[in-house]
Each structure stands twice: as C-alpha cells, then as structure tokens.
Image 1 (tube, rainbow, N blue to C red):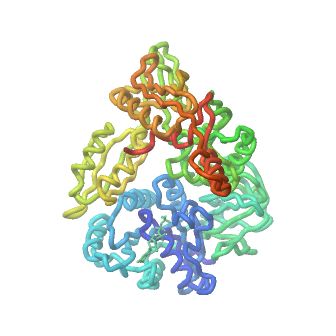
Image 2 (cartoon, protein in one colour):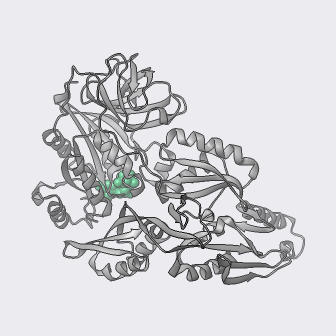
Image 3 (cartoon, rainbow, N blue to C red):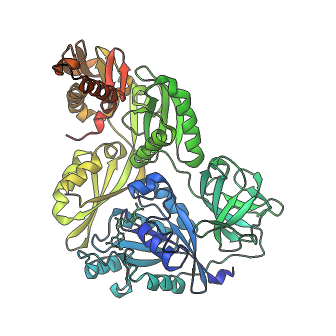
Length: 594
Ligand code: GTP
C-alpha cells in the first residue's frame, strides 16, 4: 500500500467511556465485519475481557475507508495497563481522545492524553454516547476544548452505540491524521508493539513497519537479542488474520509468525530488521514494564505445586509483565512470590490461573517493594513482608511513592483531602476543570493506595471520583513490621509492613478481623499482633465442639448430605496453618474496609 493512503490511529479513553463499542461500530461501518457475524466487543478476544467488559490486550485492525487504509489500534484503559497504551501509541500518528458525554474528563482521560502528546500524536477530541439522555455535550465540549486548546466546535460528537457521527469521524481521521513517513528503500525496521502467545500458532508478533519492507520466508533479526528467525507467515488483521503474500511496507501495521514459543523471544519494544540486510540503528524502544505489587500464591493442595509452576510458565509466555520466583512459607508451604503491574493485573492473573489451569489458590495480601539499609551499611530489597528485618539495626527504609491525580465534583474536595491526608499524602496542587469539577494532585505512598484506597475514594464520593497514579520514585519512611501469631506461633503469610503511627491500630484491627474470619475450632486459638517481641493486641477464638449434624433433628438423610456437602464446599478454600484451619479471606483481611 502507498504510505500516503495509510492512517494509523488509536482510541484512548478513560475506562468505560466506550472505546470497544466505538471500535465495534467502525468494524461494521467499514464492512470489515458483516452485521450477521457482529458481536459486542469484537476485538476483546479473551473470555475475561468479555465478561468483565474490559480490554486487557491491545488489538490492531485494518479498516478500508474511502480509498484509504486505516489501522486502528484499540487500547486498554485501566491504570495497570498504561504500558500497553504507551506502546500502541508508538505505532500511530494520531489518536482519538474519546470522552463520555455524560461523564466528562476523568483521570485516565488526562493520563492517556499526556501519553499521546508525549508521543507527538495528532489528537482528535470526540464526545461519545451523545444518545444518552444524561449527555451534556455543550458543557463537556467546552471542558475538552479547554484541556487541549481548541475550539468547542472542533470537538466531534458520536454515539458508538447507534453509530451516529461515526462516518464523519472516519472521514475526519483520513483528513487530519498525517500519513506515515519512512524510507521505502532503506533496511527494514519494524517496531514490535505487542506479542501474544497462541496455543496453535506460537507467538504472534504485532509490528508497525517504519522503514523498508518485511516479507514472507525472510530471515529476520530481533535487534535487542540478535536472535534470528524465519517469517513463516506475515499479514494483516481485518478482523481475523489474513496472510499478505506481498509482505508489509512502510507505515503498515500487521503481524508475523516465526514459530517461536515464548513472548520473551519476541519482545515488545524491540526492532525487527532483515537478517541479510540489517539496519544500523534500533528504533526507540519502550521501557520494560516494572512490577509494582507483589503477592504470594500458594496451591491449597500442596501436591499442586508443580502444576502451579507450569501454569505460571505458560502464562508468562503470554504476559511479559508477569514475574515470579519460588518461595517457601512456614504457614503455607511451597509457592511463589509473584510481581504484578497493579491490583487489576493481580486479580486477572489469579483468575486466569484458576480458570484456565483449574488450580485452587491461596493468595496473600499484596505489598510493595521496600529498600532497606541496615546500620552496618548492608542493603537489600524486600518483596515479602515476612523478610523485613524485625526492628533493631535498620538505618533507613525507602518505599515507592506515586504522583496521583483524582478528578471529582468539587463538593467532594473535603472528603478527598481527608482520605489522602490520612494516607500520608502530600498535596501537590488543585485545578478546576470547570465550575464544579476539580483535579486534585497528591504524592501518595504506593503502599497506601494498594489497600482499600480506591474503594474508600469511591464510597466517600458516591462513585464520582476517578483516580490515576504513576510511579514517582521512592521516599524514606518510618515503617515497621507487624506480625500476627496464632497459638503463639508467628504466621509469616500474615506479616505486613505498616507506618509506625498506624501500626497499633493496624494490629488491633487485624486481630479483630481474624477472630471473626477464622472459624471456631475444637480448641482455643489465641491471636496476637506484635511488633518485634512486643505484643500490641490480643484476641481469642473460643473452642467449640461442632457437630453440624446435631442441627438436623430427625432422620432426613438428603438434608444431612446437603449439609455435609455444603460444609465440604466451604472447606475448599481453607488452609491448615499449624493445627488451625484458616480460610482464604483471612490472608487478605488487611484489604477489606470496615
Ligand atoms: P474498556 O475496554 O474497559 O476500557 O472500556 P471501553 O472504553 O471499551 O468501554 P465499552 O465500549 O466496553 O463501553 C462501556 C459501556 O458503555 C458499555 O456498557 C457500553 O454498552 C456503553 N456504551 C458505549 N458506547 C455507548 C454509546 O455511544 N451510547 C450509550 N448509550 N452507551 C454506550
């Protein structure tokens, strides 16, 4: 294809503002998917994506429109997947900035807009969902125009649901987004912006060709690893993979298959070139995603440890951001310490492990990474709270901090500030986006956000606040380890690192929560919270002689069986810690809000 006829663009938006729905309409209007095969969220191919209505992996699809070739890249909107967004942006010249006409600008609208501006993209501001009775297009067109510095009349209005305005939007893309520029005769250079493992085809690598040409049956070179492969298949997605025998030229977006089995051999951000005529210089790559949140994952049934390892190995083929290493817990046995990009990433990985690999898992409460320096100068990184040195010879502890942005109606300013202050936040600034909507910026420790911060924020603002955060380095903090003891024995999986001023309240709350969560056993179970050797809270679970069958007066055998089955069911998520049966909920008790 003549590069002058190509337009590469992405859609960026806050979560739920309607990217996938708009993408669906574009597929339909351009005739790529006929009405009969259309289904909602066409591009969200994973079950979890469809069930949760969220996009996790980016998708690229080629749309013919008015004599042009449009390559649309659908991007995820959630904060955990920002790294996916930034890679997709590198493959585009323009971005549709989509805003829900009933909600207005939200935290991720801003975050994504800044990413797009950094990547020098041409921005098309668009209000979506104008069919909603609650839509306020005038108000939000003004807000959006104010944000990007254009006239409110330049803000397009569409409905991804009804299709209104979508043709005009496609025309606008052709008119205003620049065609890609590259050197057709130069050595081939293509940017890998995604890499997906497929059971049948191996790794499918998504590329954007910048210079030159990539063909079928060509020996290619991955520039960062110097590995060479042969392209077994090369093509475009429209909406299913279509082999392109002529290969891909300047500005084109498509996929290639080389038969490799591990996404790490086809790394996102790497440059693909020809092995026989290699390019001199790599394209500017992406930063490798760094895990921010860690948690322990243990099989409930210890015999399933090898299966868990195998499942993690397989999942990593498809998720380069997933990291893990084996660990042993005195309480939970053999398992893994797993690093995630954020809480949603954590939930998704866990759900996929259980669902796709049939495992039953116990997970521990998430924590961040700490840098500890001892008085003797020794320095180490703590990814598991139980490895945190118990007081004594610690010189300094550093914890990760974030720059957080909260958007909300201005009536909630007081409530938001109270929550942030209570979490060691430092106010950075505040701006009014319109008369009644405000953007508040705080520095907040990441460790304070990963617990119930978002839930608190939502409940104190009746769901109106949105949050975005980005890593902003580390800071020193006065942190201590709080241990929990059952029957006098510390349970490593319950240890947490908490700010000194909150340690006492934390210990008292945890002991109380655990007393409620751990069922009564045949013997008494004392619960203690301690900092080092100092016990700061105590609770007691009284013993019972539990005979559930005593509840079934008479001889109704089916009822008895049901009760027994129910009891068995309830036991599934129990783990023996010493002699005490502990339910999964207890291991994540620190996460729940009172
Ligand atoms: P993520 O993929 O999770 O980032 O979400 P998304 O931005 O792709 O949102 P999605 O397309 O899943 O839409 C979110 C919700 O808004 C869904 O319930 C859609 O049915 C609804 N929706 C999307 N577009 C429109 C629209 O134009 N009008 C109306 N009334 N509803 C819409």
